[in-house]
Length: 103
Image (tube, rainbow, N blue to C red; front, side, top):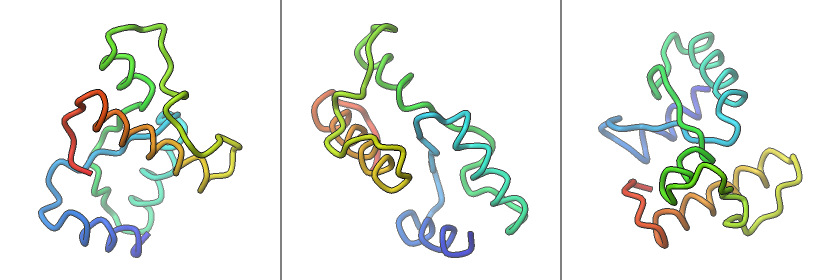
């Protein structure tokens, strides 16, 4: 967790507007939040997270749509591959759908 925190500092020196975005954030957030508080007595993301699927639904203004077609890396329940695929989808949301976000 110290390495994770150091990496966050390197990519965002001001620590402003750090967002934890994942799919399924209800599941992933529990681990990230607990581990940061347990080992560092803080969570650099604050007290909330954002769901990638919900973010996409808002962008396209349709609660029945899924972002999953934006992934390039196959979602195989391998944590690294799944994170890569979700990052690819987020980048497409920024570049192709106009999501205002710093990456």
